[in-house]
Each structure stands twice: as C-alpha cells, then as structure tokens.
Image 1: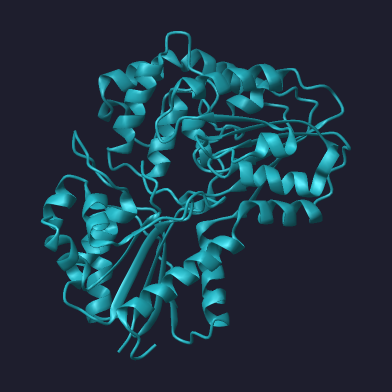
Image 2: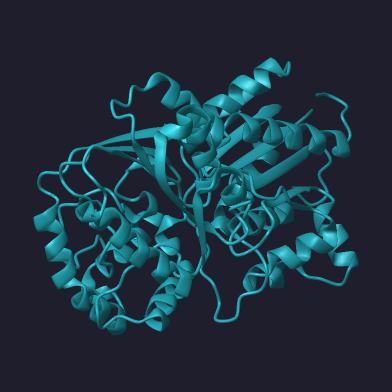
Amino acid sequence: MQGLTSLKLRQRLLQLYQQLLVNIRSDRLVAQVLQSKLLKSENIVLLASGKAAASMARGAVQVLGNRIVDARVITKAAHCQGLEKETGIRCLEAGHPLPDVHSLEAGEELLEWLSGLPAGVTLLVLTSGGSSALIEVLPQTGSLEALVRLNQWLLGSGLDIHAMNQIRRSVSCIKGGGLLACVPSIIPVEHLILSDVPNDDPAIIGSGLFVATATATATTEIESDALPDWVQAMQLAALDCRAWQAKKLFNHRINHQIIASNRLACQLLVKLAAEAGLEEIYLHREPLAGAARLQGQAIARYLRKQAPTGLHIWGGETTVVLPSQPGRGGRNQHLALAAAQELAGTEQISLLAVATDGSDGPTDDAGAIVDGGTLGWGEVQGLEAQRALQEADAGRFLEAAGDLVSTGVTGTNVMDMVLAFKQS
C-alpha cells in the first residue's frame, strides 16, 4: 500500500466493506443453513423480525418454497422492500429505534397468531437486531408514551446493549421468552439468529422474544434503586405478565442457532482482505465497547504512534451519552469524528467506522470515512468538531466534510466495524 493517495486508501476500505456486506447478507446465510438443516415437518410457519427480517425471510423462501404455509415479517419502516408483493408474505413495518403504535399492533397480532398455530407445523423463527423496538406488548396499565420515553432514555444513557435489553425485558409482557410462551407447547420451534450483541447471547438479541430467562421479576444487572422512579414503576406493572410467562415456558421445545455474528464477520473480513492481496492484516480481538469518543481517540492515537503499517480491523459496538437536544449522527459518526481530530494533518491513515445494517443511530447513513484532511474540510464550512461532538452532531460536520458513508438497507445486522489503513 506504500504510496497510495488518500483517495485510494478510502476506496480500498470501502471496497472491503462492500465485499463483506455481500458475504454476510442474511438471505444468503439463512439459505445456507436451511439447505443443511433437516426440518421434519412439510408445513412450516415462518416468523422473521428485526432490521434484517425481510432479507432473512427471502433466504427461507428460496429454500423452503411452498412448504411455508403461513408467515409474518416484522421490520423497520421502508425495510419490507417489496417482500409482500413478491412472496405473498405479510410484512409489517414498525418504529425503530423508537417504538411506535405499529410496534404495539405487531405485538398484539403475533400474540393472537402464534397462540392459534395448528398441530403438525414447525415454527421457524428468524431473529435479527432491532426486534426490541419493533414488537411490544405492554401490561394493561402501560402506555406507548411511557414506552417511547423509556427507549429515548435508554438510547441516550450510555448503557451497553446488555443493560438496555435487560431493562426492556423487565417492562415487557413478551420479551424474555414471552412470545415463545404463546406458542402451543406441542409445536417444535427452530430459531435462527443474526447476533448484534457481544458474546452472542440469544437472551439479549432482540430482548429474547423467544428465549426464556430465569427471571420473571424486574431485576437487571443495574440495581433497581439506580433507575429512575418512573422506570421502576413500569417494571412493577409488568410483574404479573412476566410471572405468567415463566409458568408457560416449561415444556417448550426450541433450538437456537447463531448463524452470523460480529466475531465471524471480522474473521471473514480478514479472509477477504487476504484474497484481495493484502499481506499486512491485523485483527484486534478486543471488542469495541464503551464511549465512542474515547474509542475513536484511542484508535487514532494507536494508528499514529504504535500501529504497524497495513489493514487494521476492529468490531463491536460503542455508546454515546446524548444531550437533551442531540443533533445529527450515530455512534459510528461520533467515533469517526473523534478519530479525525487525532488524525488531523496526517497523510498516511484512513479510517472507516460503519454499522453493518447500513443505519448508524437514527440516521440513514451507515457511518463515515475520515483521514487527516477531514477536520480541515469541515472547518472550511464554518463548523467546529469539538462543538459537534459535544452536541452529538457529528453527522452534520461529516456531511460538510464530504465524509459520510451511505449504503441503504444492507440486509444484515452484526454490529459495527472499524477498518483502518496505515501506510508508511
């Protein structure tokens, strides 16, 4: 890579990212798994949920065809992408990252549909990240306004996904195995999962709609006393329906299988880079976590002062504590802008920070690609990087610098990636 221009470095990073997205598309992964998995029943009922649900459902249709006798797909707005017209599968779009009235409607429809499944079918569940917001059933005293308030608070809290989804489970009537509890116990369930959480815990992915958890109480890893009073009140209101779930889950037969994860995506990226002729490839196995700003600064300093030349790969998911009125952006844009501050003036390093689902935070951008010139281009437009970070407005700065990356819906969701090239 010696002597490549900044533009060429950027192109190499973006090409690798695009190759990765092609190889971890969920329709492709689901089809591969189902081709090798023997589903005994000739009558398959399909439920796909999450941001990659439509793509996962297409993979199932490709292999199972008319063995699918009934189906529901629950996904983010604008993510059905013609699925219903192409396949006849009912596709419902709901709110994400904040739940909306359609999230509650989806939850109620699934409760009725799943509880009425006939004997002799196998339920095939396809889960991807985003299901937490897209599907919900609240206790009788719950309200959409309180649910939205909770999710706004969680998204700006700086808590990691494990803590957030434990809290989401504790206020819900269907998370933590609640949807599984509605399925007649004589029906076998196969569960294929795209992991968007560290450690690939099925109970955390999508808040575990089909994963029974040991707790039917409001307990989380966060002490209840540390939560706002109004959150504790929501937890108490859900105790009765969560206790009901626990009683219904005892005899259910379900197999969980992770079909893709961030760790596997990182390993695949190493393989793709080697096939592209790169020889100096460094996979950093410690997952990205914690504050996006601190991670961006730390990675950029490492690249400048210690890192060997070559391609560097990180995977994981960072967090951002949001101000009361956040600007435009997501955690990857926040990380990228913080890195750009440290890289200012350098010529041999480019860094790409992106979400694999193509949506970084509540934006239509996947993330950003930055280098030593990013800060200057944004400042020429009259913007200040430090202020943008303080106001969670990294996206506006990066747009002005011409450094945002947009992919559209990718059909997958395995957390975030940071790729960087350093040349001598």
